[in-house]
Length: 152
Image (cartoon, rainbow, N blue to C red; front, side, top):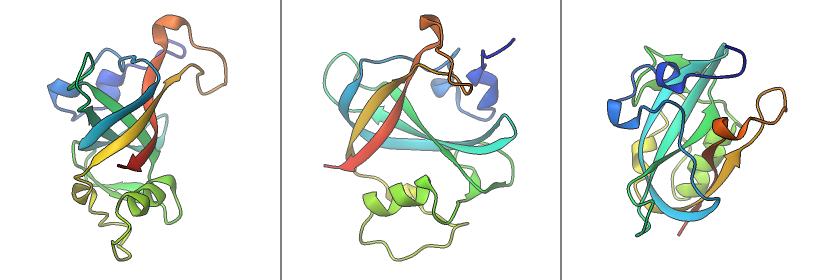
């Protein structure tokens, strides 16, 4: 199938309300959002984690889900919604966790309390227009992802 990735099957244990035939595309920009859940999955032999944000801005995209993807060192147990993982010590996920939760003491890498990220955040959404080989996606395969998250 080439570069086409079936995210529905890649995110195995994800509840049906988050399953798509590929992620959706939204206009690029900033939105207010809350972290609804996370899911662990494997993609191309890599351990990954997707934070699923729910847009709470009033308007056309209210209630829609946008993912932010991170690499993790390894998974604990099966890949699933709110699955266990061991974070990379200096990885992007830990950087984001401490920026969004600045009063948190240092946490163990196998017990990162993502459930404590329960605030309203300002997310930046951008289109993914290139594949892993840096070739442009056809416009039908372009989807949106969260590229930055900030406290309000």
